[in-house]
Length: 431
Image 1 (cartoon, rainbow, N blue to C red):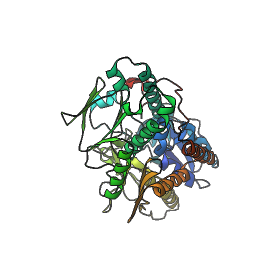
Image 2: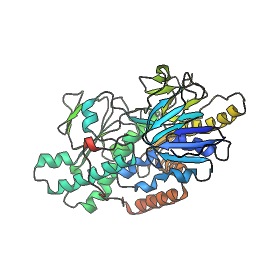
Image 3: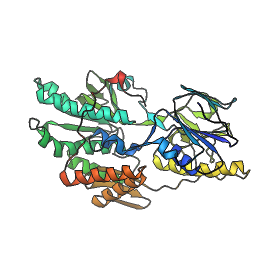
Image 4: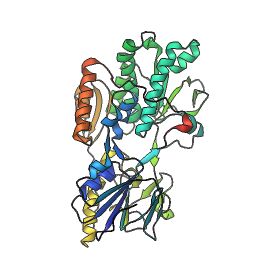
């Protein structure tokens, strides 16, 4: 990989997501050689992917070059590579561009879409975990509007204008709200030959409320906001299959004819081959780690973020698979790596829950902060501030703020460009 040999201990980080970036930044000017591996050369701010897919933002607003993140560290290197295997006894990581040795290995590969074994959904639905997938979805949405304007068959037109989203977590809720605002504010101006009332947005959830991880109060507010926007919500409903443009559910009387079925119903860990069997918890596909983020059975291999399952009394099923645990674990692990080379006792990780939030649309969001729950316009401004703050790069913050301000003033979504045609299922970019 053309990484120079160094007297410094080498830390290999697999994954340039929130956890990997957080760790790499904290290792700046520390006595380590840092090597980051990722199959893409940019960090993605995943919470705003849905805005790319619904024409609210361009992808360069939420993506940031990994090399630019590492540029302040003269002992840091990036290699664009896909990791194939880990040989723990040799302390070697195998990739598609060669092998690299490590003194300390940190797996921060995050998560991938979970289809819960439903093959018809995996083969035919569309999902959104990466920038290419978000752009793919944007193309599909806009192409379907274009197709609908010339469709002569009423049933085909109905299928093109029917949007079905499975999973009412934050992604599903935010995507539904964004589509509803697109229908309300953009369609009447851009597509005079489409009646907005023809467009239907269905949100399917297997549990009895939207935003299941959040409080009942926030869930009820989010459902109210969605219904005000005209989103049709179907609770206690599971998807059985999606074939021939038909979504079938566990309710025999409820099915949907749609050419846009979006799967946002769950994620699972993106594990790598090579470690001991006891290291991986099969059901979650996440690595079993102790309070120091060490993977079960290893002292020099760590996992952070979504891929790490750290159980405790407060979190018996592990920390939530969101950005904050990854960021905090990355910062904490940097401290422990320093303590390791100084032969000091490692400090256990303690997660500080900073709350959860989700936006539904213009002036509509919900926020849970410890014992404080609130929604509406103030929650929406809090949501915007927090997301701007955590975006990587000053330029990205400025561009995103400008786009949001423009959209707010003009009731518009400016990025309505089909820059490439939608790619069918088998050609979709993998997670």
